[in-house]
Amino acid sequence: MATSALKQAIEEICAEKNIPYESVIETIEAALAVAYRKDFGEKNQNVIVEFKAEDGSSRVFDVKTVVEDTLYDEYLEEQKRREAAEAEGKLDEYLEQKRQEEEAQRTAQAETAAADASVESKEERFDPKKHIGLTEAKQLDKKYELGDEIRTELFPPAAYGRMAAQTAKQVIIQRIREAERDIVYKEFKGREGEMLTAMVQRVEGRMVLIDLGHATAIMPPPEQVQREHYRPGDRIKVYLVAVNMTPRGPEIVVSRSHPEMVRKLFTFEVPELQNEAVQIKSIAREAGLRTKLAVWSEQKNIDPVGSLVGQRGTRVQTVISELGGEKIDIIEWSDDPVKYITNALSPAKVISIKLNDTEHACVAEVKDDQLSLAIGKSGQNVRLAAKLTGWKIDLVGDSGATPTSVDGEATEAAVDGEPVAEATGPAELAAGAASDTPSEAPPAPAEPVEGPVATEPTKE
Image (cartoon, rainbow, N blue to C red; front, top):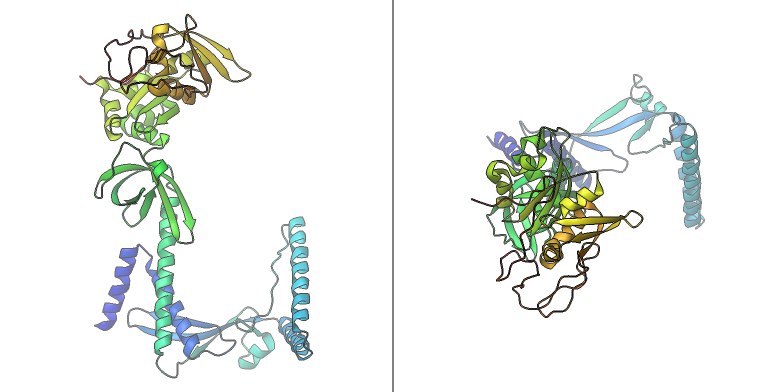
């Protein structure tokens, strides 16, 4: 009854830790070998244990491999030189000389192996724990040949002591922990870039711990959306960013702010993305606020923007809901920089664009009443357009004007997608400053840009 309970306990550990049964058996055998060496082991014994979980029995062996006598003779000569150096008080000098000789030999072998890949650089040396000379093996039994394995069974003279048992327990715990870490690392290492549905485990300071089942991931502050609040028990979708092995085990990093998360969410919702009829060429995201997507399709009969928006905006609204209301602009990608930048600055109407290919920059001219719309709230629209296209964008009005703040001071146009000087004044921006909420004197509505340029859909 006790033996079956032992096997059952091992199987429960395997199921709980997701560790193969053979790994646990190997761990127990290694722990028993450590315990035997601690209580009964002798010098130059290579102790191997065979354990049977069915009846709880174990057998102990001293295992040695038969090697050439020349290796054994070289070992004996080296031992004699070592003893002579120790007797003369020159052991340190002997060890240093031996180290230099071995280093020079390894260097020569490495150079030989580099010159000829068929040459093995591994040097075989006699180890009294693992090897036995051919002549000595023949004395035990004439049937032994080079490369044979001699297994001599050892019988413990008494039960294991308390210290040996404690050592075996520590070995088992450590080995199982290492095996569990390896399993987790191998499972998630190949899944980087996937979208996972997980649960918030707990929040420690600014760090959020995410439960992935039999593993725990971390979501550091840069990977969080500032507008979101994470509470233990919440089920959320996360993007698997990286899996790294550290001294404390595998570190799994997930994100809610990564731009690729938007791509994954749309891929789940849009069949045209799954069969690659439509492609997302570029993504620019400010997590929690706004995202711009550039989409494209080789097939003329497919509207790439409409595919992501969906009928009455159902597809894009599903993604917006998952992202907590984050606004999404979908524009059509083009290999023509002028058309691409024009689409990226939507919903503002662009009059003309002057390109500077040398500096990869451009100057976009818009109507004066469209400047605030083109720049966006706190420069968000032009900043995202610059990230999306990869071009530095300067904005000017058709009369050379720049947007005016509440106090009447001019604000310079955005450079490199960042506002040089942000308007100051009341929290609610007045006419001429971009805002997501209508003010008393709203700017003139943007006229549609030529070509399909899509912004976020409105709920009916």
